[in-house]
Length: 318
Image (cartoon, rainbow, N blue to C red; front, top):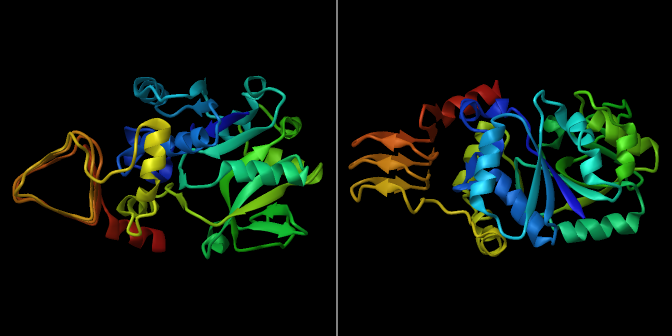
């Protein structure tokens, strides 16, 4: 079985970070977010991966190639003009072939059991099974409408009036039949492929009850890195065994003054932290230099800019 990873997005909600780095490479606890997805697929025995790319495409190619991830083969589908989740998948129809495949977003941190998802899908005998996740945020983010054990709607796009506490997690098992309902033009997979399967054979679902985080906004990205409950760090050993990388708070090659005070923060590769500086509840991406005596609290920093989280919280609350 092959997997298709959606990694071509612009990551506009994570600007300014994505101005110089593609969203799939934005690190969570010093591991690129894309690698969490690759690790999960590898653990499920899936080694053939197709990945669509567009924004900072060469960076993604370069990092993957230099990482020498063991036991996985990744084929890139570069989109000179971005095609969306629907068009991007349709473009790879021949690469995927005529067998069922797994679809995964690149901007989620999760411990979804893909083997169990595949078992549920096989038992359903439907052309598609989506992984859903119960959360109080479903109403505001766009809940999935379910009825009679199948999916009927997404955020009421089909005007069914159905709503639930369930969100689509960005992971699914799909039949190649989905390509019948898709277009090569820029499109959403929800409006083309998923709708097509709802009307022709039905779209099943599997409810995941473990870890699932969407890091698509600055607020959620910051919260994921702080990992206050330790749920992401719990993935460390399985990720190390699968791909040789694991989440960690302070990069081994960061230069941190013994006189610096660091608490509940993530320090990226190549960072330089000066004496008597204070860093609290913050995320420093690779290459950030903190001058001696500087105080950084509740922030996300890259080498070119700083985002203070109180400001982000206020904007998202408007």
